[in-house]
Image (cartoon, one colour):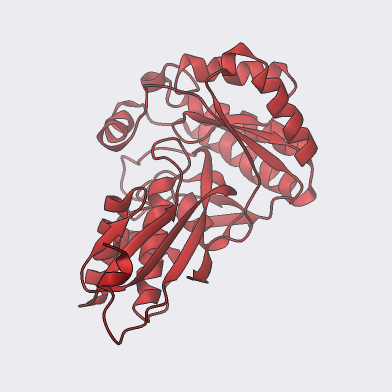
Length: 330
């Protein structure tokens, strides 16, 4: 049966679409606070144009969901419809989305895209990202994806004191449009998410205040200013240093600054080739490597493809997304 066969007669039949960039996460400032009044989490990340998440919705006689991660999208859509008191049903089509648990922030982008598009399909203007995140239960640790969904670009946030609130927005920077990012996803059986992620946060020791201060300094005084000034070298060295320092806070659960030994060796190899802006996005297994231009990115890919360490890696060249969510119609 085609989705169009279930459309309600007399209702608008033109589908509404919301698309979002994916998210790179460079690392957290701290973990969950153990004292009242202290801040939890906070961190730095960047939105990228490809892969993207794109969700299309229209009114229907019954609830349907199609495409990758359809069941998750259906859950987010129904949460939103219930919140709004909608009696209508919708057909949800996930048109484009990256794989889950590879470090590109699928969960938050899928949730916010789906929630926003249900608002619009129901004839209601969608609210700010913090409201969408609350409806769908996202942003409980990192707010980078939520703010990035709304604004695009390089996002720095300071975490929250009240766990019912999205992390405090600190600063955003436009990323130079000539810069490129090579995404390198290595095959791995070690993926930390869901319950395993929750347990991992319970095992790691408290982040030292000096470490948080150093991460803040790298973000606020090196990485963000470098992006604004188009200083590629300063930006690249800052992103590498930030990611490594943030990753070391997880040594008790991942054995070092990176999720696996293979990822750590890959980062070391890329650095030895002169690729300075290298790091692990979130828990991995996706690594990112910055290049100053499309030509430079192509050269990085050629060098990676010639190395036995990257034989089974999935490679993709993308760029920063400075716009955030986009609205369209089918």
